[in-house]
Length: 297
Image (cartoon, rainbow, N blue to C red; front, side):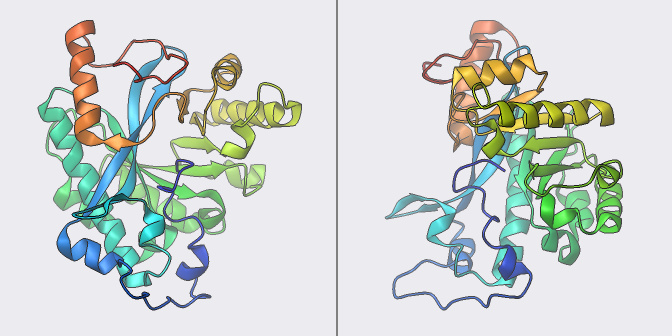
């Protein structure tokens, strides 16, 4: 889950657990139900960069509302007062949107593995496998969809994680542990995690080049990922110093403002098409610049 407001489920965990009732919308306040009804929900994508090669290898979809008069709105504008029913409907819309967006990208000759954030409650209450079977792209080169779940939400029920992961694998999809390191999972539990990625919590990434504790934690997570055959993704990368440190310790993928801010899919497609024409390859091979991976693309 990226570190901006698109990390839509953090802060709403108590709502999903039933400990906090939804609040009635204030006068003039937008609701999730209204956004869904009018078709205003969309995904902005933040690129994921392979640190070793500096290639664009994927993107995370972050929820936005495109309002006809208010413009682009982050989830803070409509999520806090949402009901569980609305949030489940939003999750389904997000998954289907990501699947459709991959097809749009593929139509432009661009195949990236996309990821979205999914609350654990949605894995239980939504027919995720059925949605994927019915809505997934039929193209042979579809790389699948990654669903990110927060560590401390999933770690308590490994039986659920194993069951969901098996259903997802049948649909060519996988789970990723988001904000890894914040939940203090035991090594015994880590051995049982049925995931494809560990996303290093941004609090460890920030200043990892000068903070010995943060650097040590990042190294430990990367080593765990390597031992368990999992990709490691550093989220919240904002400086070249952090990027170089993460690359040096063997982190696989970086995501953050150093490379690019979340952007509409058409902007991402436009950038990739220009790079395709310039580089003759689907994956971007340009080196990141101080002002951003896509700053002058």
